[in-house]
Image (cartoon, rainbow, N blue to C red; front, side, top):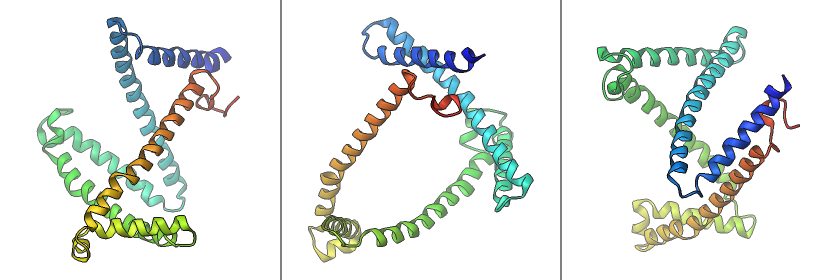
Length: 219
């Protein structure tokens, strides 16, 4: 039983991980075919993971509704939205269940355009106020680094709006240069760090150092 719960998943993770790495360095048609086969299995596993994720989400919100915890009405709305969206996708204005046209016409498309899109716009509009509040607290020139950040943010924000060109004609070009050179360099540094973190985490999983996905934390 311990072999099935612990050892076998580690073996599968090691074998699949090593194959996934090696196929990128083997210039052979068989390796390319194996890579395509792995991609197919990846989509199959992702489909099962999606079902598991939906089950976990519904179970969590059902527990909140059943116990009537704080703000349980929002959890109830999750069930309502899930059921309505699923029925609209299946019905699709008489086109038929699971047809490709479901995204182009029918009630599903109506719900996306007139419910999902306005809800997204509302959410990001509210987030704008939180971002402005956080920027006010962050952009305080208490240190030289904070002063540089404050000045750069002011130049970029003013240079992105029409009033910036009215104040100084070259301000939009300066703001664009700051976005293309210093900002892009910092962004690439962050992406390199994230990539190295992904590689390190993947190697830990492949070689069995990271076992938290087995449940019960690392051993």
